[in-house]
Image 1: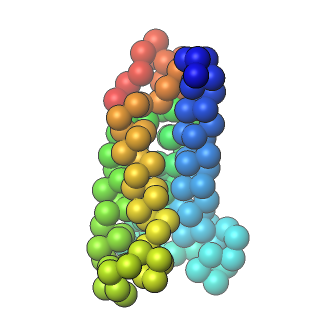
Image 2 (image 1 turned 180 degrees about the vertical axis):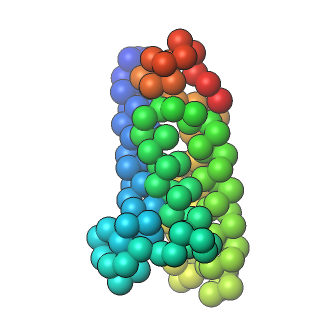
Length: 131
């Protein structure tokens, strides 16, 4: 596969992961999509902190701005979420509803390894990929 096609696929991957993660944050911060009964989480709470990380981390990933830093922070959140919320419900991710956390974690590891890719705002603003 040519590098140009790989660049397009990676850009699409980065944007899709970022938009999906941003939506989880929107549920918690703004009550989007009926999340949390249509109400936002209290900002000064674990759910509020998760919402901030998910919304702004997802946005940074979509924009390709500080992508590696956002990937580290969001990956850490997913590990913490899995061990605090999902694992106590059982060891099988399919049954403890931890699959999204693990899939996001794996996606963030890819973003950490490869950075923002060819098209990103970090390069536009700073002339190089920052973090």
